[in-house]
Length: 192
Ligand SMILES: Cc1cc2nc3c(=O)[nH]c(=O)nc-3n(C[C@H](O)[C@H](O)[C@H](O)COP(=O)(O)O)c2cc1C
Image 1 (tube, rainbow, N blue to C red):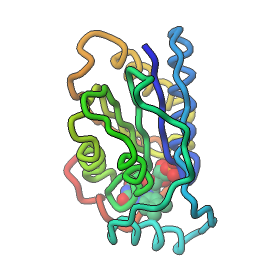
Image 2: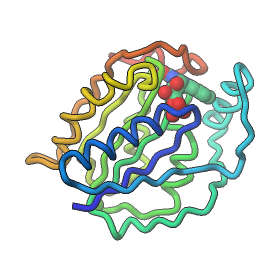
Image 3: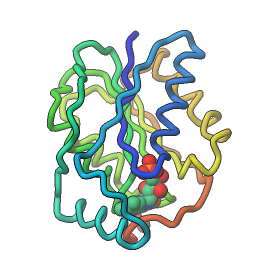
């Protein structure tokens, strides 16, 4: 089984999760390629400006331009896609990427990183992959705050992706690891 882990990360949490996933696949004797989605706009924003800019991208439905990516989904049996939650949605670069590929009929799994208010981000993420077979979903609360806990949480998920029953949607029981108060207040009211 050939797997690609495709992720966008602004602050390093999804990057950490993607690297942990790759290691877990390697530990199970399986190869997984890491593919990082990068935006053309590489300006570093901090504090309020970062949240205002990111949330406005979501609320305005922006699809930011991406740096060229040498990636062909045809070569993979499983695509794991990861993105941070911005304003209760997957960060817009994920949508930009998903406009460039046709994943109908492909087996895919989704992860998102958030600060405790994922809202409907995974549902919205799923909606960006029409026709794909969603093999699993997981959400992670700011894993950079607890890299050890990250592996413990990801291990059974990785096993489930390779094991029997793959292809059925799985739970999204976010585990609070750390508390970077994130976002624009969107998504915090979502049902648990
Ligand atoms: C613009 C912006 C909006 C965010 N919105 C949310 C949100 O709605 N809910 C939430 O729980 N966290 C939100 N966060 C926090 C991030 O989702 C969280 O810190 C995530 O782990 C960041 O992943 P990254 O480090 O890979 O970029 C937001 C962060 C930013 C920068």
